Amino acid sequence: MKHKVLVIDDEEAIRKSLRMVLEYEGYECLEAATGPDGIEATRREMPDAVLLDIKMPGMDGLEALEAIRAKDAHTPVLMISGHGDIPTAVEAIHKGAYDLLEKPLESERVLTALRNAIERKSLREENVRLRHQVEASLRLVGESRATKGMREATARAAPTHATVLITGESGTGKELVAWEIHRKSARAEKPFVKVNCAAIPEDLIESELFGHEKGAFTGATARQIGKFVQADGGTIFLDEVGDMSPRTQAKVLRVLENGEVEPVGMAKTIRVDTRVIAATNKDLRERIGAGAFREDLFFRLNVVPIVCPPLRERREDIPPLIEYFVETFTGDSSYRPKRFTPGAVERLASCPWRGNVRELRNAVERLLIMVEGDAIEADDVEALAGEPLLSPAGSDRDAASSVPRAQAAPPGPAAGGGRATESLEVPDPTAFRTLQDYKDETERIFILRKLKENRWNISRTARAIDTPRSNLYKKLEQYGISRDQVQE
Image (cartoon, rainbow, N blue to C red):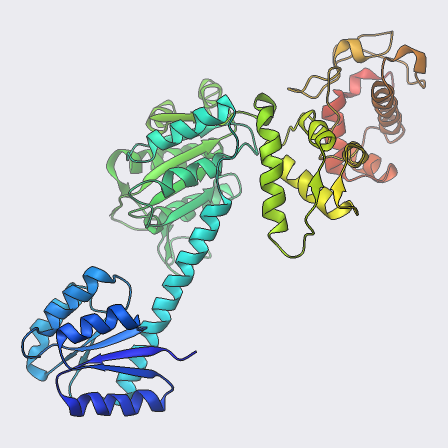
């Protein structure tokens, strides 16, 4: 498709000359001889770029520029000026013109400026499209009382400039809440910069957050702009803020107090206007008591606290979340649309979801991939019950901790870390109320036996029973297994 360029100039010779150059390069060229005609053509034709002469009788180029900008803020307007019009041209740039072209016009200069202007417009439009796409896919789903409270708190915090501290377990949607706050704030058009404080090595986090000068330390071969400066005018999201070192905490506190950033190796500070949203899955008050987190920083961050409740405390949100994830995944052509039956939804709603919404999302995706039919049944969910994503739950399991309750254990020593030793014999099936209880206890004893055989070496045991080490760790947590439970 040809790009359209509108030429607004009272001199016919210039219009014809530009038409010849533009059409030769594959552009569609439109013409207007006056400012009012050019404004109307811009509205009607929606060109990809406008070439606008400054000196015209009647309405001049500056007036036409203002009128075009009032109706269309994004179409690039390139001003054409005579040799003596430089001050006026500079004023035009301040009023929103994209570039300045001096007479006599040079073909290569005109074409280069147009290519850059149209490319920039295309990138802006693509950015807007992707932004809308992301915004449509990132939303707080659910109508439970807990989710409504979280949504209301987010809406109240968004229009302010206050610092926000989001707390909650891993996978509860803390980043989504941060994004919602930014999206609904006056900073929405500015950058949203995320920093995972737990993922950056301690010796690099200062450099990442505040930047560094070339040669500031070994390996600093070039100057680096820090995340706070990148987020200037917008929002910085400090995820896992509880994992920051004391030194980094002190520098973050300085930013919050003074709006000043001190890059590593720089003798002066840089002023920034950056809103801070922090998140953590740790108890910061507990870490303050342990001397691991600054109390003054906590109070600076905790101006507006928002809690993301775990999924087990808002189970009524699970059905709409399942529906939302199915819609999201099947929007991708690589997933075939499938229906979750009421039994499958009920089974999923009964799981403990220690990984919260993220774990549920992964489970829905796995079921969409692995189930061959058009409907996903409760039995399909049960088939995944032994996998890490779907640990069994129900009346005989404590959903909060996912450790079997005392009454679920067979007769004998009480379940839990308090027992010193226990038998590793296969349990009597008649001692259990449900099949799931019997399967759990049998699996627990099997794992204990294999651990003992491998001298409690986790890696060797995981290889011996052909399961990922991460899965074995989850099983240890699930069953409350510790080494002192078995007599060596």
